[in-house]
Image 1 (cartoon, rainbow, N blue to C red):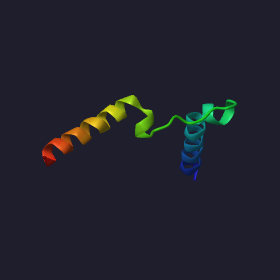
Image 2 (image 1 turned 45 degrees about the vertical axis):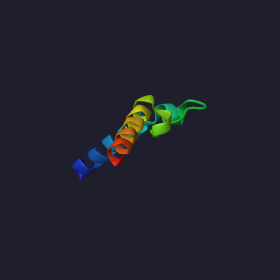
Image 3 (image 1 turned 90 degrees about the vertical axis):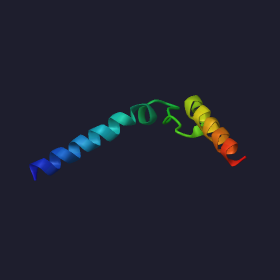
Length: 57
């Protein structure tokens, strides 16, 4: 039972710490993980599309 309570406490602490900015800062929000918002992923997506287009020709 002690192990279960410790596990739940650690999970709760981790969740709260990950969301500190979003939960406690006025106007805070979680960072976006969408491709169109992240330059590195946007470039990777364009590169992948270009390679697919070249292989289809």
